[in-house]
Length: 491
Image 1 (cartoon, one colour):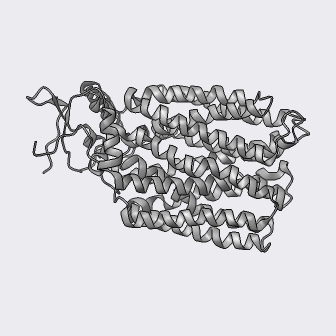
Image 2: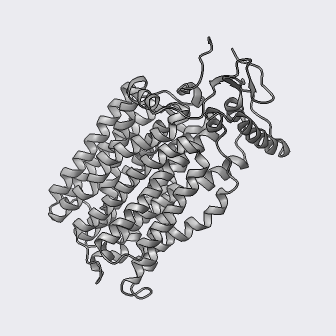
Image 3: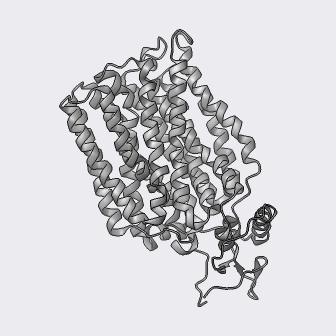
């Protein structure tokens, strides 16, 4: 039964228990300027990743032509894999620290690492240095994912959590468009001769990240995290300040019932509980999460990291012109989550995840067959990829949504990190290197075989989601997965 709203978080007579209505009060807030600012200040992480990934593909030909680096296609794939490997390890390490030390501390640390590493990439002098700096850049981005996704979801009202999450993930492609546009200018030998162009491209990310540091200064710590780390008073002060902002703007909470939760006081969650939650209590959700993340990671990283190589090697597009073909591709990817996002809240998670994953796989089989038969010119190939990734982008975004809302509050950031790491490790690290070698064969049939592998993974993931997916639409995070420190109503 719904409980009356409390003025503040209060202790029960039992000194080891916290009773609070703060999560419910956050879910009752209307969408406002506060939420928009949170999304802009934190969601820019996806934009930065899109920028980095696009630059890596767009400058591939420049790296191969560089008199200093002289990369082969396999070297380009290796450098891409180094970036993903860094993201995997960074996500794991920083994800654990995010749950242990707090969301706010970590999203400053990870952003700082990203700024330093991407600037250093521009100063690379050989394959080893380039791969190392790409590894560190990936570590910063991987750590950002864990800290940022958990923070945004813990502030977003449940009724719009799906659309918001997918929309933020879609901004990856705004970064991709920026990277593509920047490469068109900076890779023009008339404007940036020799090795200068590709080096300037990597400075774009560092400059953009520096510009957003100040935007994060006002973002508070997650009240949900504070409650589970025995800081109820600090959590209450933050929620009351947020509510006061809405009150001053003349905005009132929705009429949803306010519910109270009871938490056991403790400063952190023991690792044994973390592993028990992931692999025993919620093992079915773990299987779904791992499958979704692996399929989309292979599908995306294998194809997108080698996108420029397909254009240059099979369609003979000049390296300096690759950005023109990346722009429409990025547009389709951005529109997918934006247009389809509402359906994940209205129709439901399980239905939409199954639909987008299955359709993405089937469309890639069709376009791959046409590619193998040389029935598409470069414009038609780009159009086909636009249609495929309109749906695949929503599918990939829904994988992150699934992971970040399916597990208890105390391990949410680590869960994001674990399944991002394992999924990306299984599907992403091998993908670019695998496709780089397929392209080096200069055989369309070999590349088509790679597309079939990616399609099979997406269709298999659709089946898993249809059977075991979680119906989390419009439900509070604490109801989708009861926090580990929360007490059942009968205790």
